[in-house]
Picture (cartoon, rainbow, N blue to C red):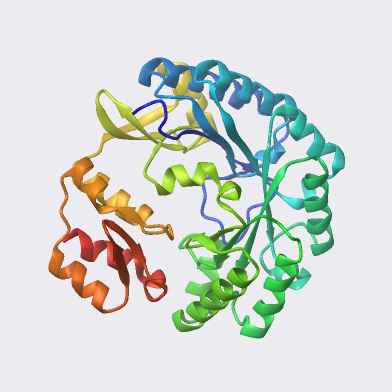
Length: 383
């Protein structure tokens, strides 16, 4: 990997004040204390990655996710940023982002985050309707969310907001009002996610017991199409299936690394990474539980407990499944050069004729009709 290729670092902070009923991430309820044991393990893990995989390039992005990483203290965030800078170095336009819940944000806290080195805040607003927020198990109100956005902007941070739609029983008219309220925040970046009911979550259990009825696929697609139309007219076109930005400069630099099949280091409990290790693209996964992760770092020098060299088929599948999520799609010539995979031209032409895909020179992208069935399209292209 050349020094000019985007390269990122993901830091997973697994603690949350409460566990949302739709979330299936590797998270744990916040306990007393500042979790300094976990912080020290993360710092050691960053250093170990630098030693064991080398320094493939300056960091284009450093992303704090979770969990609720805004529960970290500013001095903890600063320690991670300083360690990453020493080990890898930062690109001059590095994006240093932090996920946060609105109820934890005020003017002072946002300024403290900015002073620690954060330059982008991703706020989990989810809705600006108090009834919907209660259903989603959120601790904040719509008014608190609006106040949090203003506080982040006042601190000079780039702000993105997450929203969830397609709630059970949500009509087109209700989401139209909700989307309008979201756009009234006048942000340069939004993420709009249809509610997904995952097995094992509280919502998943309710569905299994017949207490919750998710919407139909057709209704979900109608809401998605409405979202694309309204956001495009508002000057916020989708650059990825669920992500919208006012300009290319406003896009998420870190998430683009995932979608463009780049390399990143993952540290923290359960964090995933993709790096060039021993001359081969490799998937790495950290120990899941916080105590196991800390013990893994103490025992082996880093938090990784799964190392899987990726085959050409693995790399091809990841490149297609992630790259096709972008409106710009992916370059088939580059894919062939990298993996040797040649897409079956008969199948490709069939999907183009059916209106799912489009091909401009060597760049393949998904048309509106195909957004709801990207996973199926990828499987078709792989066989």
